Each structure stands twice: as C-alpha cells, then as structure tokens.
Length: 113
Image (tube, rainbow, N blue to C red; front, side, top):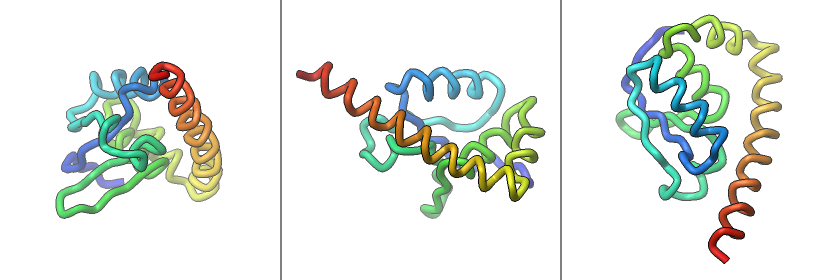
C-alpha cells in the first residue's frame, strides 16, 4: 500500500477505547487528527479519514490508512489488506463499531439526564 499523509483522521475523543487507541497512533505518526465528537452522528459510528477534495474512507479502510502511516504498523496494514482478512475485519469492525456507538449514545444520554 502506498503511504501518503494527506488525509485527516476523524475520531470520537469521548469514546474511551477510540481515544486510547488514537493517542497511541498519534505518538507514532505524523498524520493529522481531528476530534469529531461534535461533527455529527455519522462520524461517531466509525473511524473516518477525510482527504482533500472531499473523498472519505471509513472503518477498516481508515484503520489500514492509519496503520500504513504509523511507525511499526505497516505489517498490520498489509495483513489487514489480505482479501480474506479484510473481509473478516470488515464484519468484526461493523459489529464492534455498532456496540461502541450505542454504548457511547446510552452513556452520554444518562450523563445529560
């Protein structure tokens, strides 16, 4: 996978799991990161990377982008890009993202009540 760093990684800082993981990647990469907690529901449901001219990638594709641009994680980007692994990762990611999204929504609702 060709490495480039023109994308901006959008993540939900209020999700403790997301935030913990992104903090780790921030220390090891030169990618630009932006908190998207207030940007809308769409961005709370998955990790996104926004590129100039409006192109976006999300979920496993976004993680592969992050890993391919993070020191020590290139191997993981290559592994996750293998067709069978990629297909399984998309299913697993969709399930985990769904759980984390609803955990976030329910937890935040109870805090604001």
